[in-house]
Amino acid sequence: MGACEPQTFRNDYFTPSFVVHYFDSLINSLRVQRHPIAFAPKSQNLPDSEFWSDEASGVPWITPADMSAQSNILVSAGSRFISNVGLKKSSAQLLPAGSVLMSSRAPIGYLGIAANPIATNQGFKSVVLIDTTVNYWLICVLEALMDSIVKRASGTTFKEISGAEFGKTLIPLPPIGEQTRILGSCRNLSTVVTNQ
Image 1 (cartoon, one colour):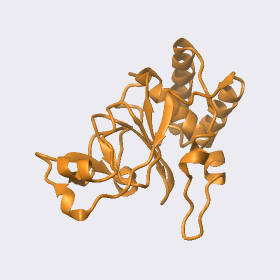
Image 2 (tube, helix red, strand yellow):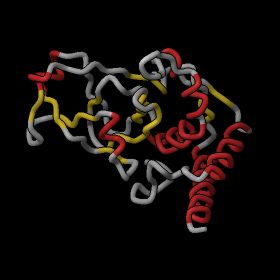
Image 3 (cartoon, helix red, strand yellow):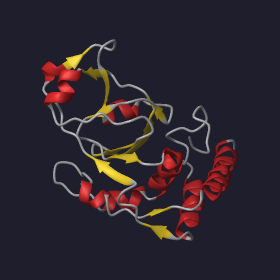
Image 4 (cartoon, one colour):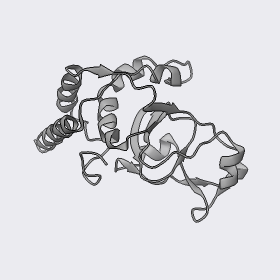
């Protein structure tokens, strides 16, 4: 997987503003690449309520509200499960393990990595990765770029980032070894700042 251990890598990993600034300055110094094939945003629509299932036979279904209760970056399930029939008869898609989940409205910016095959409601722009070794890196980059992503959102009742706008996000992609070094430095800084 990625450079950070799941049990220590949380959604609030970059909460200290100093660490966000540090990471932001690092990625701004890297060569920026656009990867339209590797990073494919997936949107999904809410299926009819008759398609819900129980945990034993259903597929985990995630909403932004579920993400607000997550304490770990790895997301395995929410409060509801959708049936296999629901998946077939709706526009929902089964996202593979390792996909990066980002809430795109109400609010924008909850981030996580699918720990197992999972489906989401329409409040997400999820990224299915060809190479899941970069998913922890992508989480950190999106966190650092979140202010600019939010600024590109539109809407009157609530702000939402569209698939087209989210797809314009440029992702710095250094070699895996450099990703590991940067993520390790940020993790160490996060620990220092949090313990102050």
